[in-house]
Image (cartoon, rainbow, N blue to C red; front, top):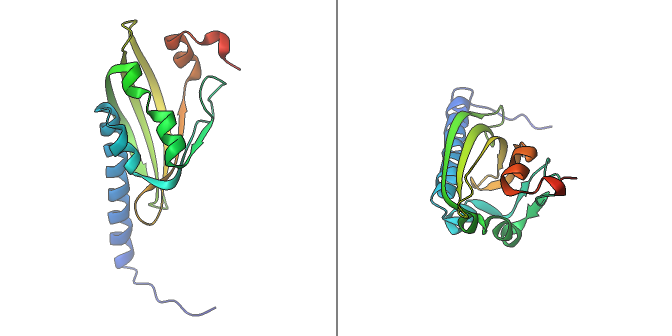
Length: 156
């Protein structure tokens, strides 16, 4: 194996720049959802990016891969909600600065006038070398979601 020289003083700066860029992208993603600008939101994903919902519980897609599937997944947001706000409780770049963890609250006013949907979200965002989201794993309480949308009987 060849000897690779690492500039130890430059490493923290590179790490910090990458971490800050990726955390800013997570903030921008949430801001674009608040604005319901789905096209700009999707533009932050890699062409082969994916959304994973481990607790989809049969009421949501468990996975969407690629911009077309992501568009299908997210395009209903403006149809469902008349207002969205997110507040970030925690956001951290991990040991690998291309992985960002975020804990945030969402409050969405239902367009049909039936109230406000709130949930807690825990997300892991993975970024590629170009700073695009390659994977978003979103963990949320599916019972809360099902109750808000009248889907409790569809939970699996």
